[in-house]
Length: 444
Image 1 (cartoon, rainbow, N blue to C red):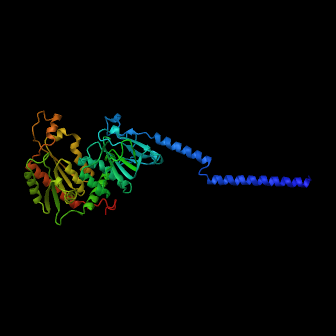
Image 2: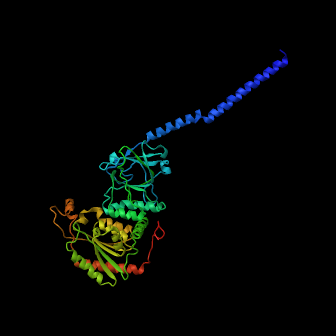
Image 3: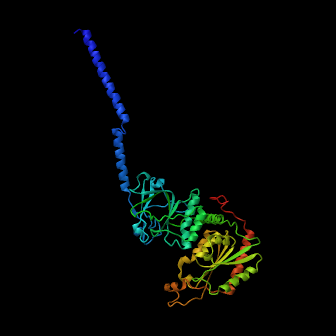
């Protein structure tokens, strides 16, 4: 064979080999394009899935009630969700919020709905993309309340709820999608109707209480955004508390469309809030007569007598909006004072034995008056009452005195009422009108 033919044959071979290589490259590219994942992508996907599984399985649920703090259940971290810290700025409400940078972006998850033992209910934190298996994610803002006392007691319910109003103001008027209520870590499904309606008026939406009944005990509920309160109004300044009650008052009046609630010509509104049974008056007509007599001495003064349990929420709002002086026995009905204008007066009465045996709880309406901008005008304590089989200072006597009837002292009540009215008239004449909530969360 000639050299020229040999060279020509080699060129053909090279050409064929080159074409084969090109064909293989093109085929490989097409294969990669039609394939769902490359080997590297498959490896990464498998590793990610493995990591997600590990993160899900690493979520650790702890009992909502930590018995290590049973001796001080309301102090410090409290025995509710004890492993977590509160967020707290000077003078502001103490709260926990999820997710935040402090939690690494993790959300709050709750599991269990036991109503008798908080040890069977638990909590955990989880990343939104790796929630526990079978978890339900609930959208929107969830308010989680821990209350050491009874939500059906108006005072204790109000104390537990007002801190959420403080958060509402602080966080651009954020509104809850649902509420979750705990008492000692146990689930509760309702509150006092008065408190429920007050919250609906304040936030502008119905109160939806989540009781988890549609979930099995072992299925967690996680929350897109959660706010937890466990210290009530603790840590808040007097100014911040007043702002909260200002908003509640304003929004309640808007909700009930009562305006100021005042009739033309009414200068001094005195209201007696009456009770039936426990801590009622031995001679109600005599007590009413004393205050009515003092009110008649002042032009433009009117005495109103009401049994709050017979009034709707909006009827109570209207009544208290026209009240400058409220007179009442110690009891939940006095929580209505927050619906009066600032600088109004509160007169409180007690049965025998409370001063000696009731402890600090007897001063809650002194505190509420201060926090809501009212003036507590002191208290009258009946020196007479049902006999106790033990010495009067024996704590067992409180069971006798707690719900005792209240008598009266004509001379004392007359002078007391006269002084309170006189002081109120002076305040009205010398203090500027004040609209503390203008422009706050929808108040005009």
